[in-house]
Length: 133
Image (cartoon, rainbow, N blue to C red; front, side, top):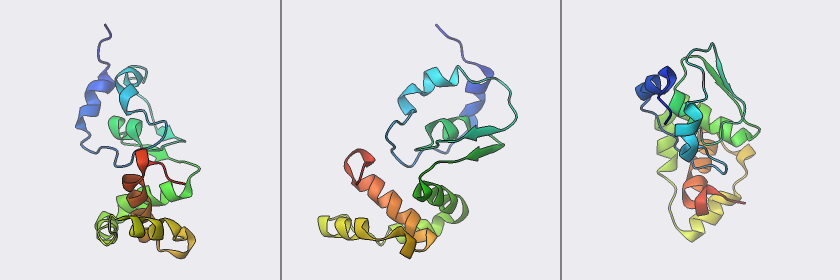
């Protein structure tokens, strides 16, 4: 039986949880993954943040997150910087078939960053397993 590392015990300070479901997410693997992290490190760099399970669990004080999905990074940035306006935009979206297809068809490049973030969260929460085409 593995014992908890100092890092595993320190992560309890984080109350933030992933707000997106992502293909390949690590939530179920966290107990095993956290044992592999060193007790001390300088900067945590997450090049493929996805849903952010490891990032939110570790709650590093000094970190950089990245991903090749621009919409995902826009969403994390807007939630960090202006969560109230993201929530306000998100609250305008209806959860029905017609609205879903309308919102899915919106071109992110024609939306504000707030609306882009709300759109991604909406699609993530209303699609099957968070996957949309």
